[in-house]
Image 1 (cartoon, rainbow, N blue to C red):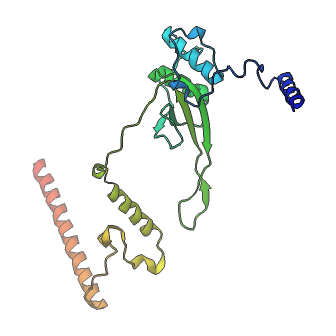
Image 2: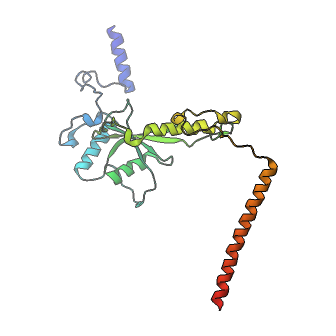
Image 3: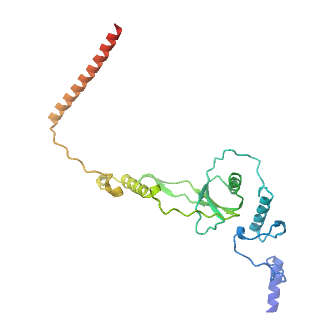
Length: 255
């Protein structure tokens, strides 16, 4: 057994997968804490990074102490940024040291890093990208379906923690119930064809219709035609009187 242990240890050392057997027991225990929660001394130059993310964190903190940018600044200046960056609430898997954004599809990781630092002064340690699949959508119930544009999300790791404020319990100011009823009314109204048009609508308790057809009195066709002719003659007579008054005023003004 001792021979097998020595041979396996030598093979690991030859492949570079393990440290020396004399220093393995004295190495610092690994921790699963986020990078921002690891305590670092004032003199960062003497700290040995434990991984690449910790190295980036130390370089960022050292640059901030010196008043410099934590990365190489670009030469192109943008005074009116066109991009729209939307901050989202974190999911259950995110820590307070992470923030999630919706960015344009043309954005890359360096663009978001430069944007957050130059606009808000927020240094970013790491950026991960997520491109969501586009959803199928129909404009009409029997119309063709198509895909919407894809949504690109980016999650950044920050040095300091950020906790979202608690959501208000009273949502009456936003009229959420009215918006839901309106969406329900639009769905019921737009998807009806044939005899379904006259069915009652459940949204808004049926106040917005459709209403029953009001009863109309029976009028014979001959009598209806006579009344329409009298109405048209009265309208023509009124128009003629208005025209004569205008002509009369014009003649009097020329005298």
